[in-house]
Image (cartoon, rainbow over all chains, first blue to last red; front, side, top):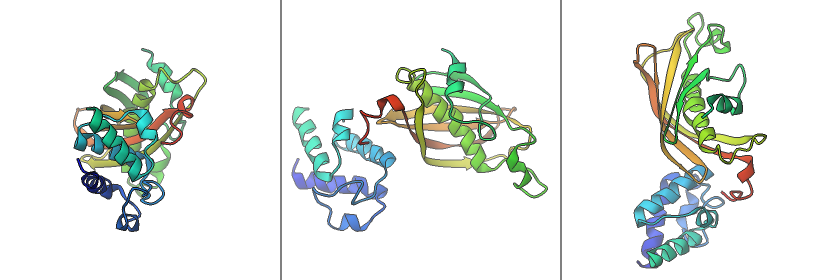
Length: 84
Length: 155
């Protein structure tokens, strides 16, 4: 799967949980889920669960705690897809 | 399984404890009961001369039995005797069907939807004595024992 497809898909998944809509305008790998998008920790769990469904992967606790930015999420998704 | 143990770990007290007894708890579900005392503090103001249990209180009762009690059970292995739990309500979406009057006893039945990354989300229903549905909805909270704090600090 291409990087752009993953990023587009992540953006679609996270959009309903975003409090700071301006953060979506320049959505890129540096975008921080909590600081830039103001997603709360409970909704971040929803994002992870939606990512699991969308990409048919399983994300463990260690991966979850390293998932601060969109780029982190993209890397984890790519790694899981490669090892699937 | 000792439900008394779970009741003791609930971080509430009067006038904001809305659990009298737990009837059943397992990995997937929880069931409990509460009787709203006629002299509960909120009846004085809700409503003027017409006491009815507020929806937020019914929601709280569903959360305490259906989410927090179940969460304490699920965390049991981690909750050391002396340690407390940390919790916060994260979302609730509830539909109400029947009013609950002072002195009524309600039964709360909860089914776990998921418990992952400290978030416990449940489908919860409340019934009256005639087993009629009072309200139902989805309630979620973040819950963890203070022991696991270091591991999940970033979440």
